[in-house]
Length: 315
Image (cartoon, rainbow, N blue to C red):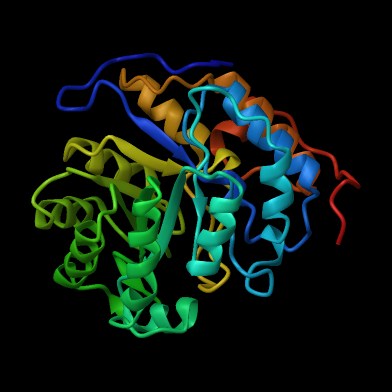
């Protein structure tokens, strides 16, 4: 069996893409069984060893909202940081920022919605009032010298409202960039986007500057959408090792784009990532055993081995 894709570079693509790894945070947050903190720490360490240079490690969200991430302080306190690797964390509010600063975090992310319905369900805010929560967090983070990334969810469609107007996404995104966020990740939270929609949205922003993309594979469009984003000039792509993840506030959101599937495509196109595919497959096979179920990644299914249930994960 082929262990690496045959490389045939394609014109019009970036020479190198940064994969923003979200597995430890966005990947694990939807798991019902609590994953022990030592497993999470090893997961992060394995990702760094595989070549990742950006690993979103956890979130300082209230444990009532996301019980899986209640151990954020313990995880960060015991984490062995690798020089040259960035370890951003998601920060929902001022208290979350306080905790991030206490742990010496140098990079945070905030999470916004492009639609009214999801703003209410995910943030308990209106589309407009969500900015009242973000503005002081971003301002104070910048005052402390932190780098701030912004996510925008439901950029392509919302299960309650249908297709999201492109202009509405741009209006929300530009406000976040104007606050001082260094990067804006456009999220297809329920995976309904298609390549033409991706191209149109990036064009509506005036080009790919400061944009990243975050695709879910609900309708099997994640790789096609990623390719459209790359052709439009985007060079930062979010992905989750093993394809784990989802959104606890949107039942139709399935797993994230799998890092291994993305790496297979990029390497086949001659695009550098700095990642070792074999190490990623080994990590996903190991994690699948910890979670007690197979990885949804097609590349892991092809190159890995079937996992066995591990008692390290406690219900």
